[in-house]
Length: 148
Image (cartoon, rainbow, N blue to C red; front, side):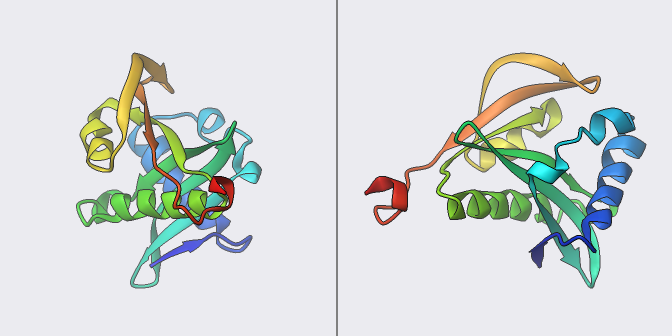
C-alpha cells in the first residue's frame, strides 16, 4: 500500500532516507535534508504495517521532479521502487503534469529505463555519488485540463 505522508508519518519517511542515503551511502545530513521537504509531496510504501520505502515529488518549472526514492535494504527486490515511481507519476498527473525528471544514481539507470526514463547530459556527482539526469514525457490524456 502507498500513502501520502501526514505530519504524523513524515518522521517515518525521514528515517527511511537516513537508513538508505546516510547510513548505507554516506550522504551527509546537510545534503540529504536540503530544506525542500516542505515544498514536496511525500509518499510511503507499507508492508505489513511497516513503512519500508519513500519518495518525494516537487513540481519545478512544469516538470514533476522525483526525488529521494528509497526502499529499505531488506525490502528491495519486491518491485516497491517501481510502485513508488508509478505513484509519483500518478501524483504528478493529478496536478496536470505529464513530464518528469530525476537524478539517477548510475547503478539505477536500467531500473529507470524500464520505467520509460531516458538519460541525458553528462554524468555528474551529487553527494559524492555519480548520477545522470533522466526524463520521461507522457502524452496527457485528451480529457486532461491542459489539453483542451
